[in-house]
Image (cartoon, rainbow, N blue to C red; front, side, top):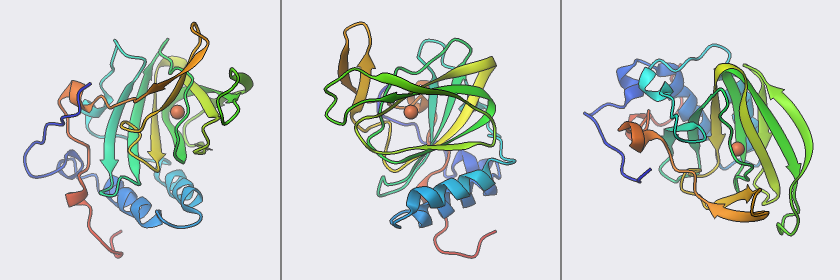
Length: 217
Ligand SMILES: [Fe+2]
């Protein structure tokens, strides 16, 4: 995936779709950044938001069969301190065990995901040890932290696909972090990038289309 997004027209897809709920969610999350409890605030906002939001633009739900999963950038704040992403796992698709190096909030929107959590020393001096496996169902909100040793793996657990919303405290597609290469038994630096460039899509919502200040509903 290259790093060039195609910008179309003057309005974001979210505006074209009339998705004021997403626009207001992005704005509310942006206002929650830079607090001591930013992650908890974003988790609360996410819990309310995912109760009845669906992605209205099918272009951001396209499967990516030749990748571990599809990952669409929906919104990135100007300071790159808030990033909202939609991931789509087909049946049999799975992420490689990875860390994030920033705070994260996750919620499944459709289908069911399975998440494996690992114990990893923060200096990455030992192989991951699985400590928990759990299902992530629609409406449930889970979190991960920025510690280098905070590794997990996610896959589609049931049915044809699983769709999930991810909110991060950094531009997750550009951030250098680590995956665990099981066959080589070593940690490897990687950047995940986004599926937008493959699909020829801009971010779902541009910062220019997020109104500043309070007062919107
Ligand atoms: Fe992850």
